[in-house]
Amino acid sequence: MRDARNNLGISQEQLAHLSGMHRTYVSSVERGERNISVLNLLSIAGVLGVDAGTLITGLSREPRVKP
Image (tube, rainbow, N blue to C red):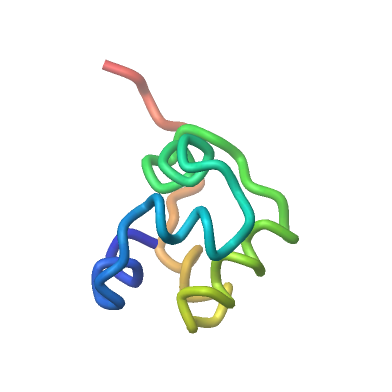
């Protein structure tokens, strides 16, 4: 998600505004700290102009371990 956002040259705040979400929500999704609904995933993918599958490709099934 971060790569696609950076490729467009938009900030997290701009992505949040364009997708109708709160800036802190978008930030926490980008950092992998939140589970995201399919509707929100589709909204973000639409704003970024990428397929939703592209955003989740390569995600591990392993749980994240917090340091």
